[in-house]
Amino acid sequence: METYEKRVLIIQAHPDDTESWCAGALALLRSKGYAISIATMTDGSLGGFGMTREETRNCRYEEARKAAAELDADFTMIGGQDGFLFDTQEMRIRTIELIRRVRPGIVLGHTPFDYHSDHRTAGEITEIACLLSTLPNVPCEEPPLEKTPLFYRTAPLTFSDVLGYPLPEPHFYLDITSVIEKKMAMLSHHKSQIEVMRVMHGIEDFFAFSKEYNREIGLKAGVTYGEYYWQHRGGGFQTYPLIQKELKKWIIEKEI
Ligand SMILES: [Zn+2]
Image (cartoon, rainbow, N blue to C red):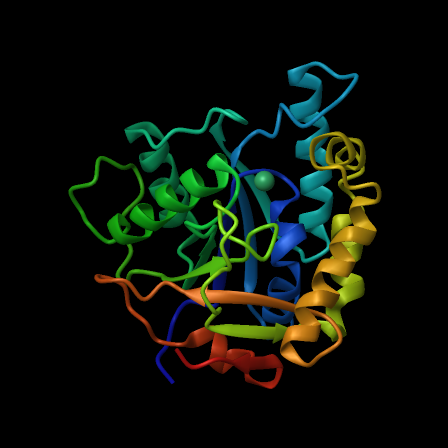
């Protein structure tokens, strides 16, 4: 088995994205001795009702921090604006700084297929930040990594891409049945999102919707509750299947 740092950094666009889509994998990796760091590209400040942007940001920071604490994870906001996330030099450098500070063996980020522009942009920034994390000439305070982290892509909100077409088959499904209650405990801290999901997406019960989503994935994978992932295997990235090996017991792998 190739060796990588036993640290996972997940970078998503908004507070609650991590808990919605990949808390199961994080809980299982935590049980295997991995340290978890959770970060968001934006401050989530548009995701609130009856609160100013600043109040919303503070509320969501607290919610995400409590959710992260369920896995003894730390939580960082990288500093982008909710709804106005752009792939800028500043955001790339901040993200590279974070990756170099955490020094993860594994990074998780959004897919390019996602419905939300902030998610797609966050995925883009994370991808290039991983690739540049080893290069000494990047104008960065933190020293470069010795190895490019392995990069995995998390699932989008629905089973379709941004235009509504079916998604490509994931590289693997993960049986999260044994940690579904941990996932729900993490998600339950994001109470501010119940109203946002009702108004924005017409989802009456955000937490029940999320659990049902994992049940539907489980049906596809032949387990009770599931998540699914792609490993970023594009040029320039190392493709050692570390999560697949570490979580072998819970993996339902698809060949493509
Ligand atoms: Zn989001």
